[in-house]
Image (cartoon, rainbow, N blue to C red; front, side, top):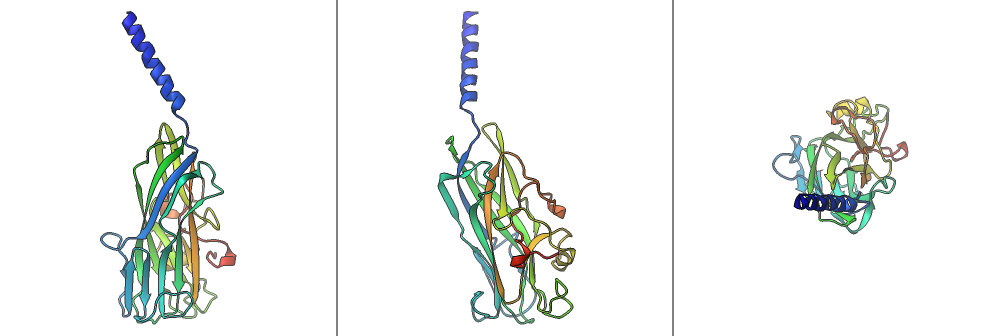
Length: 275
């Protein structure tokens, strides 16, 4: 009997010690790498046509065989670039529930130069983001990497009066929309549940694009995305936040999000969201 009581006491003390040590992680270190999928499932697809196409982990471009997708010159070549990736933080700078101060993890740039209607243009592509989180306070071992895949549709609209979205313009904006991917990840660590989410650092939570824009881009109504005017360049900074409760945003159609969104639009002053 004494042995049984002693064993039970030791077990209770061990359970108490574990529960005393277990605490919510308040600071995280991380590594986040974002790139275009270049081969296999999710590789870019282009419309029929001439010109040339470039597919690398950091850039998709199309149009004239001469020049580059450079925002400083109308080279006859357009493109989508991923900048500021990878991002690494080893000092625990990502704070749980500090949702107003996201950490930059990637920048997307759309260079919209005028190109010939005879050239092939981007139709679909996928983005792969891999996140590795490490508890910093309290400290712990790195979690398993989380690979996240996001699918996009892209529409290079013809610059024909009456065919543009919004319809009032005569030089059409090109449209980039998200069509699939779970933008908010839930994970458990040491008895706690966390939510890792992405957001546009200029605008935060998103609202869908107009039904006309979604239809033009071949996406369901309430799609998420952004516009870029002809001859212009857009850059969108995306940040990461970690929270202990899900964040409520409008549900954009088929995506059924419960967190903040990766791709989207800032205010009307940046000409990226128009209803």
